[in-house]
Amino acid sequence: MTDERPGPDVRYTRLAADHLPPALAGRWTALLRPCVSLRHATAADRPVATLGGTPELPPDTPWPEWPGHGPLSFIASVHCAALSPETLPPGFPPDGTLLFFFYDGQGGDGSFFSAYDPETWAGAQVLHVPDGTEVHPAHVPRELEPYPRTDLAGETEWSAPDLWLPQVRAALLDGGGVWPELRDTAPQLRSFRRAFDRLNSGIGHRLGGHAVPIQGPVEYEIADAQLGPGRPWGDPSLDREAERWVLLAQFDSDDDAKMMWGDAGALYWLIRPEDLTAMRFDRARLVPQC
Image 1: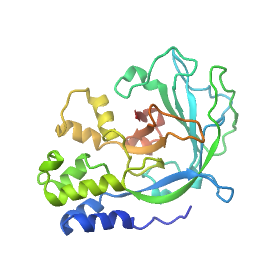
Image 2 (image 1 turned 60 degrees about the vertical axis):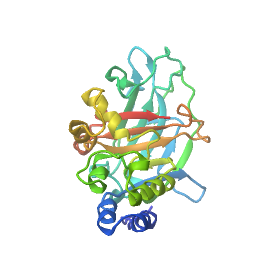
Image 3 (image 1 turned 180 degrees about the vertical axis):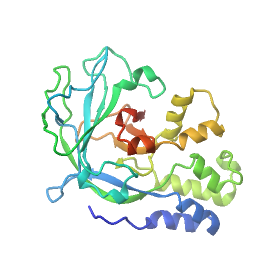
């Protein structure tokens, strides 16, 4: 990976220039964020992350579990020092390893994780192991079958926010509000929405930047969980809470790693910026979508 922040992605700047008036195009492109896009590594690559395999843990760190339900499966590790800090959210660890675990039901009692149910949140955990810590390959609980190890290389890219996020609606719609039905949207914005959906259709593995959701903004699922369900789109308190969260990582379904999240879904870990800066990964929250 390079150490320089990438320039704006020409795909997105061209999209805005082709479909939006200049003022709206400038507002929308100002919302783009850099990210690290992860792809399967080749023999010539230096991996920056790994799906599956066996994690390395300090001797005094137990294997993560959901108390009363069972151990969590190991999903991914991220080698922080191999990443360019300019492409990641402020406060992202400059070194050490991030480890992601999720209760996928192996050897469990049939319970399911839900982003909306705080009683299940222990079913998704993120650990940070600082550089210089003594670590050893962890003993995998007998209930679990590890996912095959799949190394990932990283590339710097730009990412675009989902159109339903409050900052996008504020930038593109007079006075904010919510998007009307597509047929009732102004012609230029209708064209932009269709073109954006075509361009931003791939999910993939990603660190930082904006999430690529499958079923609406993951930030709103987190906000619903924090505030309680039932608030409509455009509710000011829901918008404010959704804006408080940033993407830590998203991991797509992956054939090589034999990971299938529901019906070809993805796992999205989010965190508040102040918790990221404070290294409070116990406050990261997961949203699965499929």
